[in-house]
Length: 312
Image (cartoon, rainbow, N blue to C red; front, side, top):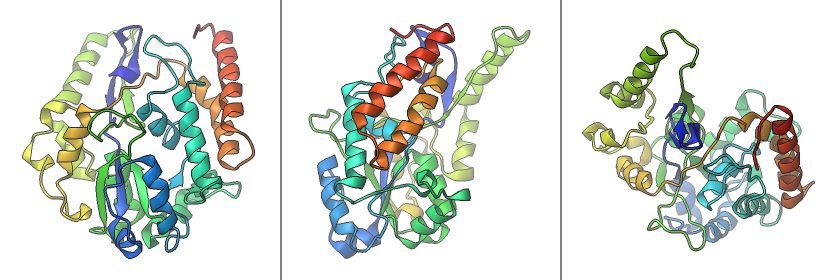
């Protein structure tokens, strides 16, 4: 519930805030001699250099928005856009490290690419991305299970059995026994304070997130639930043919205990509006990471202040 909290109070509960894992194409890794698991983000670069020989789009396609690629790596490194008490920290050193790293993957090391949808020519309907993932032009994906399990089954339906997963590569000095991770995206549910049935609404939200019916989402689209008390259910710990018969539930349980929290607060739209276009410029090689974060910090702060907020 941390993303939907402010100053120690909870305002909602999250759904789909699953542990972020790393999924890779075993056939591509075997062909170029990459041995998994990839332990560090430096190792990720070296693997990318080998992969690029057969995967034209590289080891990964970076998403330019503040959510997704940037947020996952930044929070894992100890950053994020807000502190627990709601202070704005777009310029946090961990955020800078993550943005610089992703930009270097694309522009310096040339082992990754900006995702098609964020390129100047665009990608309506993600047609090009789906073709790239399906054909093996992209060798791996990073994300929670709704992305690497449910999403991949939609994007690359004929590639089942060619994927395996591991914990995220780690930053230097990371704790968590090589499992430090975070989440990406998710839907927060709340009920309006002014609603006449608000207590009933709260009861429903708690029930909806904490009873066995949450397993239905796994049965429908292989999205593991975020409620730790159900992670030992046998259905969540069976072998998964899509992932070469790995028991993915084991990775979910381990990651859940090493997940770094993040705080979203009420001003995420202002941060998104300020940072989104600037990150795209960084990953296109037109702006430095520091310039982008410094500018976005000031722009978001001005917008929040104008709206009556305080982020210092």
